[in-house]
Every structure is written in C-alpha cells, then in structure tokens.
Length: 217
Image (spheres, rainbow, N blue to C red):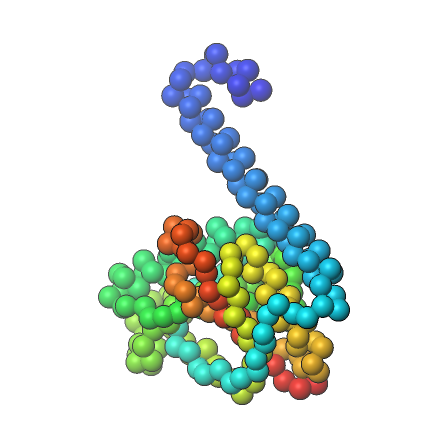
C-alpha cells in the first residue's frame, strides 16, 4: 500500500516513510531470528538428553564485585540485544561524564528465580574501583554497589556468539538441578573477552563466564 501510494507523495516524504518501514521490518526480522535461535536451543537441549554436556561446570566461591549499574525490565528475550547495547552504552557514557574509568569485566545480572523469556529483570554493570562504591557520586540514574560474595557458585565458560548463549545457561541450570543444588542468588554473566557492544565484537568470538550462586537442597 505504501509503495502504491508513492506516486502521490513528495520524494522526501516517501523516502522518510520507506526508511521507517525498513526499520520496522528489520526489527521484526531481528525478533523472529531471536525466537528461532531460542527454539533451536531448546531442540538441541532435547537432542542432548543423556549425552555428556559440552560444557565443563566447576563449583567455586565468587568474590564481591564493585560495580556501577543500571537495572531495567527487558520486555522479551528477542529484544535483549537492543537493550544490552542501549544500557551498556548509557553506562559508559555516564561514567565518562563522571570521569570514572570502568574496569574489566562487564557484568550482566539476571534477577529471576527461574529461566523465562519475557519481562526479564536485568541489571547491567561495569566494574569500578572499590573506593568509588564506598564514596559514590551523587547521581540518581546509576547505582554504585558491591555485588555480594557467595561461598558456592556453579560456573562455566561459554565461547561463542551471544545469540546462542542460552545453550550455556540451560546447561548450567541442568547441572545445578541434577547435582542436588538450588540457586541461591541471581545468575551473573561476565564478559571476559571485552565489551558486549555489537560494533566492538563483530570480528571476535565472545568469551563469557556464567556464574550461578548455589546451595545444597
């Protein structure tokens, strides 16, 4: 319909409308691709039942971690990439304005008691020096805090694209469930290979550590 009406519109207006439609279609395609990836991950999980896990899970203590963070509800897992770029972009921008140099690594925290794909309560943080958390700047759009330490956490290293990270998460949850443990805190995602921004990792394979605090049933 838009193309059919094009002959009656000024070129500039038609160009703008087409670009808006192009952006809408690109967003719809991205969402469908994300949904397809989630379905494929579930299928792989079913097919791997009874097979050895491709991931090595270790149980270890995790220390406190001083961070500057932003917490937000992500409507769906299909939109997670957009929110990841947006939230981390805001963090880097705000810390630069405050003359604070972020340290390594980025940490994404999933505040949920179980795995789900809608209304994700997510906190994204940049590691900072402990003294910054102890005497934080007077701002209301960032949270300066210490992520708590845990005596026990199940952890694995995931090496691959962010879009397939669900495979690692499901493997970690399966390990916890089959070894007599339950989650004792939110899942943490540490970006060991560098920032998660798409433009900064396009030519590199991300390396991510997943950490899930646990306790014995």
